[in-house]
Image 1 (spheres, rainbow, N blue to C red):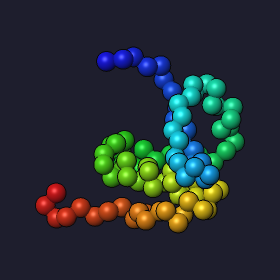
Image 2 (image 1 turned 30 degrees about the horizontal axis):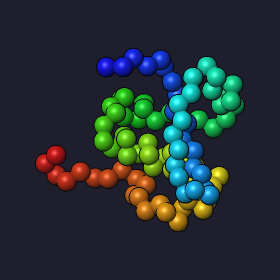
Image 3 (image 1 turned 30 degrees about the vertical axis):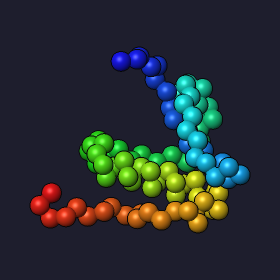
Image 4 (image 1 turned 180 degrees about the vertical axis):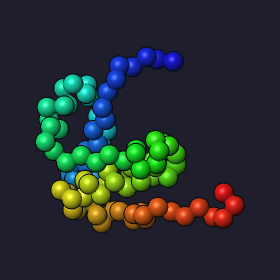
Length: 90
């Protein structure tokens, strides 16, 4: 398995190309750019269980945050914002 240094992930929506672009960046270089900006801690809500529902909610949160500044993306968003109940027995 390849070894990678620690990195942060930045998700950008390019309106002209209608593309979501994922960038990796050194956390030390990113820190001054995000200092004092909006931040949301999500992992504590799930006792740090990075399961399917957490991953879904992370994606919902990221896309919803992008839509705050780029509302044109909302026309493509059809997801359920709240948690999705599992069928009984699971």
